[in-house]
Length: 69
Picture (cartoon, rainbow, N blue to C red):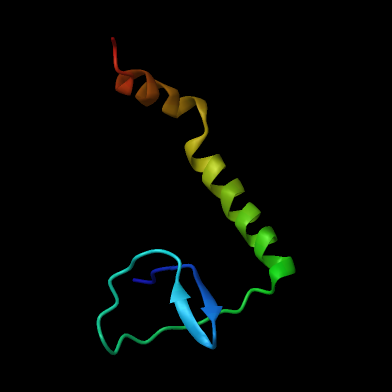
């Protein structure tokens, strides 16, 4: 299974922006995102997430999870 982790380059080394279990010797594929394209990809991802999670069908679950005081 493929796993996506965001990272940045600092002094020639790739640093993860989030924690992730990477066993020693794990092979990785690095895709470079120029700064001017990074925002496009972030927005594209958000649009897909909104389509999945921000819909009327899920409102029933939101109502069930509200805490009553």
